[in-house]
Length: 87
Length: 409
Image (tube, rainbow over all chains, first blue to last red; front, side, top):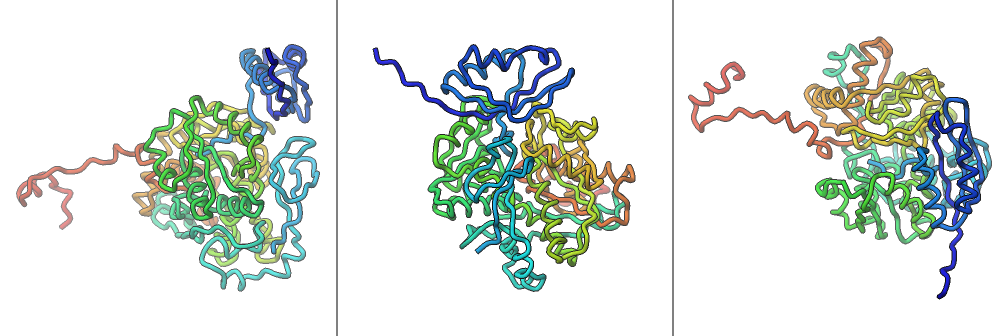
């Protein structure tokens, strides 16, 4: 069986963390579990809130799975470009 | 020839050549078009603008385009002194800038005309957007005029009737099975994969600049003076920031005096992340899930929220949110005092204006401009309860009986 070639892509996203997840090492786990390179560019994290703007690099499917996992954990995931759908 | 210089990151100042891109590669912040204002200063004058076309393109020297423009007749929309509404609200110098009379019935024709012109200059064969209303119609119309292909993406829960205003221009309409967020994600991926001019992604810095004409026109129509107060509806925050930029440019070019305009941004309470940040004193705009009938400004994660917030604060203006009930009342009030039927977003502007005037935040003698950014028919379903006709038999007796005191003698 021919193994499907992996396609490396970059994705720029913003994570917004609720208070209860501030101390969790979620970005580290995202990188480890889904083989995604996480490259933080801007962030503001305090004891009560946190947002991180970062670039993800990896296999497209892995990134999708990783983002779904983050969402499942309770992190809000948005494209860095903001909402694209306009009225 | 334009006076465009480079793209510059609004956060870290990193510069890039003029090309289709919207994010700084270093800090992933939005990029903005910069100009050679010194050269521009020698080329522009009030007289030159006045002798230009009766459209937004009289200000071409201040916009980032090189050659022939894609123009469907946008801009130079009426600025009307709102005497009746002013009396209701206690404002003696109130003006309405009615951008609902643009070719596709919203202010979006201004940025889209600029964005599609730039798309053609860059050699794109196709333009794209994700929208359920005004943006979709405008992109499709300009693509038709430019003889370019247009892709319009919409979430699957959009009512088919809402899409007629875009579909009439013949774009490729794509319904995406999923939520708004799913459409956002898909479009983000498509923008990287295909060589399209995505109007509010890789063309965003150029698209944005067209909204500066909202400021230029008002200043010219007021006899070359900046208003004391601007009240403007905000979704992504982009055009709010460009009105401020436009005002600043006119002062910098010596076309008007110093700008002391107080900038008030307006959101619907069901989608008010920027107002929330303003009121809580925060510098960060936390995303929300939008829920309002004012769909033109229903954005939960505003790309330029941070910058719009900053302008509201720095200009000593403010931020105001109104409920759907209040904004519907605002639509009715504007229509019944000034004869202007605005979309729901315009109702939010009038309802906010009412609050700001009642609180004394906007003073009665301040020259205040309220922007109506879209026409009413696109959101007429939210005021359908207004239709309460008298039903009469086709004879005089019935007419007089049913209408009674309603008959003017």
